[in-house]
Amino acid sequence: DGPQVPVMDGFEAIEALKADHKTREIPILAVTAQGMTRDRNRVRDLGAEDLITRPIDLKKLEKSFHQALENNQTPTNVS
Image (cartoon, rainbow, N blue to C red; front, top):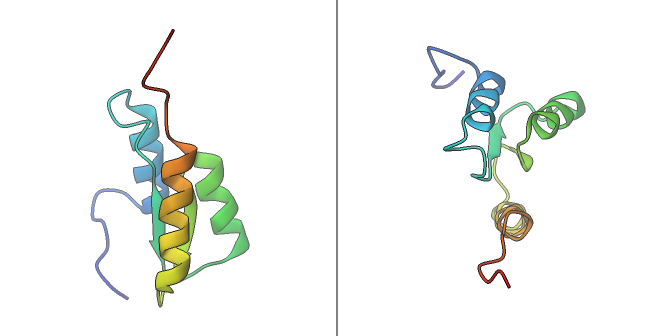
């Protein structure tokens, strides 16, 4: 086991971040030692961009970061 979030689990944390208007646009990459398909689907359903499994593959992590940032870009020039 590792450090645990004492107040809420990761799914609850994603829900709370996406429910708050101040944080809902922040891309979320969840990290876990257990990368089951149902967990990946659940974090995406909750609004996270991806679920990264440990041990972390740095190339996959970098790709996920880039995809999350590209998916969350908003136009800065509005005509």
